[in-house]
Image (cartoon, rainbow, N blue to C red; front, side, top):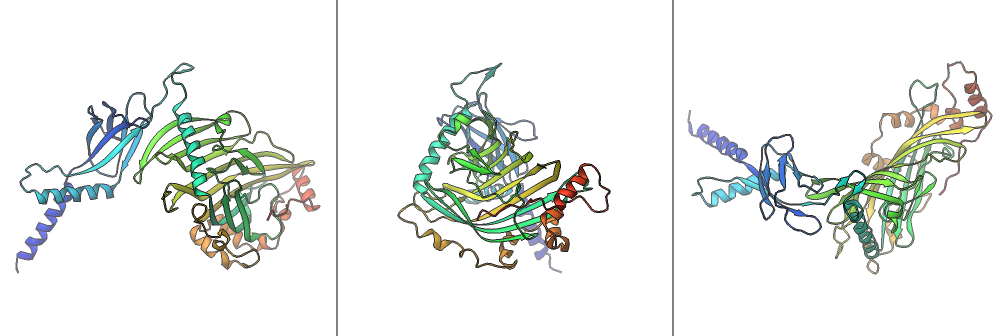
Length: 459
């Protein structure tokens, strides 16, 4: 038996192991996000590890990374902390680059391995002494003013965009007699969306499938997809709410700068959204630092004030944005909505009693069409689905279901014979097999007597 193949295999394994064992470093320059000035003395530390590195007079530092993927925490007094994520793929590319340099210069007796290079921008944070804030304006609100200016400029340059959307809404009953939440209604829609500067975002439903058949539940129907970035007012569960991106948003909301996160080669800034009065939204928004566009947002509606017959409403909303290649000078600086999620619960009081609490869960996924700036765009309508009435049956929703698979509760509704042969009012009655008295008997009588819980479709 020849030992040469065994020797070659061992040599290959040894070389591969040596390459994998090469050290990887983060070589970073830490600067002020607003002025670009180097931050001498800024510190960097791998999360969960002891030790670290500090920046020199030019803001440069070098930090060993033990086992990427690693999260590096960067701090400087008076600035918001940043978190920089170095992925395993970035580390592998750095090792390969380091190995190439070593092969080119074999006299290097102390190979340095590979380096992942970043510029880390830290944003100033306010000093709070008791109730006194030692800055002219909180950094979060200064940042938001820049975002509002950027939004105006981007809207003028973008001009218009269109999208096709698949939406799904699940309703579950959660009344006092329900052992567990009972899913009783499912709606699917295909929509055309078009946004134009000055005209807002419009949605046209071209196909709809609803179980059980009939109208929507009056107080928890499918919500049109709102654009959080370009709209001045948000239509949320029958309310018109001042948007966090309207030109005078700082009259309605305060913004506080939070964590800084780096991922996928981009830097994101998290901000807390704080309403200045009731009846607005509150939560968190994530901004793409250099582009000043929204990447995602999680907001909750302040619904302390409800109008009869709604007795209580709790609703939260999530937006996810992605870059859309607009071509030309805009490039990928236009981030447009890709996903909208809405969930919550509503309790309705009818004369003499209450309808069981209804929980809703809506998800809409968008397939974007970005025609371009004015003067360059084709007719938007040619990009859309055909007009209403072309699509029938469940087959037209297959593409949407592939993008957004049904969960177990949705499957239960979709395959339920009871749901198919019932009305909404019948499905809102208390569970069968339970003795009813008092208010439960009232619910049964009201719904059984034809109390109308169905609304009309808007379009």
